[in-house]
Amino acid sequence: KAGVTQTPRYLIKTRGQQVTLSCSPISGHRSVSWYQQTPGQGLQFLFEYFSETQRNKGNFPGRFSGRQFSNSRSEMNVSTLELGDSALYLCASSLWGYEQYFGPGTRLTVT
Amino acid sequence: GENVEQHPSTLSVQEGDSAVIKCTYSDSASNYFPWYKQELGKRPQLIIDIRSNVGEKKDQRIAVTLNKTAKHFSLHITETQPEDSAVYFCAASNTGNQFYFGTGTSLTVIP
Image 1: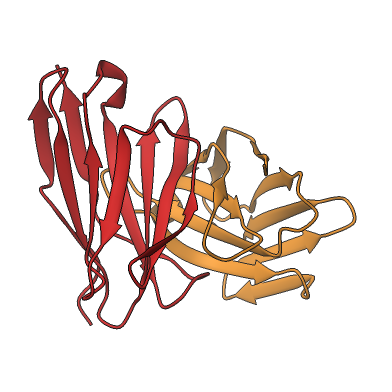
Image 2: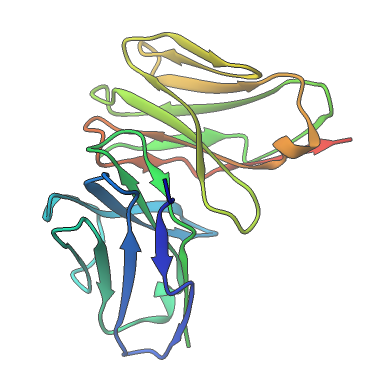
């Protein structure tokens, strides 16, 4: 099976702009989670979707949002970008929970 | 919410020696504890996991132990090899779909 894919792999944006990241899970996986990875904070949970419903949400401001489509693909949106949003954004998929498989990540740089 | 602490943050061992990484968690409801290996520039990969109804699990040179009473779990790597050099993350979850990660341990195996 093909692994988890994420697009784009690299992105440079300016403060105040918005950005949309995409994640395609492993075929058959219905759960998609998003994480922010930074050198100082490690891996922090953003939110998790299962069958198009958000099941859990981490402690991030409302500028961070997501959605999942009927084919389990997921998007994450960040509005009004701040310098501190520069990070590697990882998504992970699982069948319905527990064993997670990560994508390669999207490296977002905000200038 | 859950708080996962991981120690040490860096670890250097000679090739062939053992390496041990320890994590503690705060939420007694956590019941799933995965470990991930992240090589430089790569995605995190699940290497072993354990559920709360099991005290120990082994897979070739790696093993994980869990002490529910003390709320800590450890990763043991025996006969370390240079390719074991990476950052290792522990995590905890009580639902299987929201994960709290430790801050990572950078392991260097010296040939």
